Picture 1 (spheres, rainbow, N blue to C red):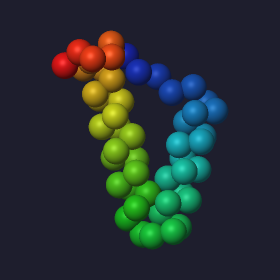
Picture 2: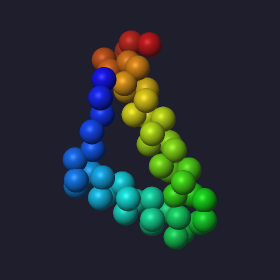
Picture 3: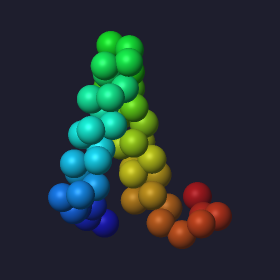
Picture 4: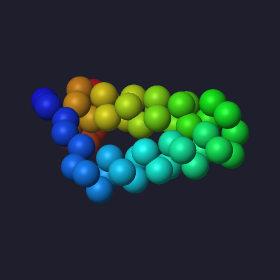
Length: 51
């Protein structure tokens, strides 16, 4: 499955990463990593309840 960010969501993700990074250095990077992990889980199991 190919994942593609549309511009508004990509912009919002970038803004969120910057915000968290400003709050605590390194937190933005951790937030982005967790978003990527969540996307990977969706790719591996796109239907609810499947593993």
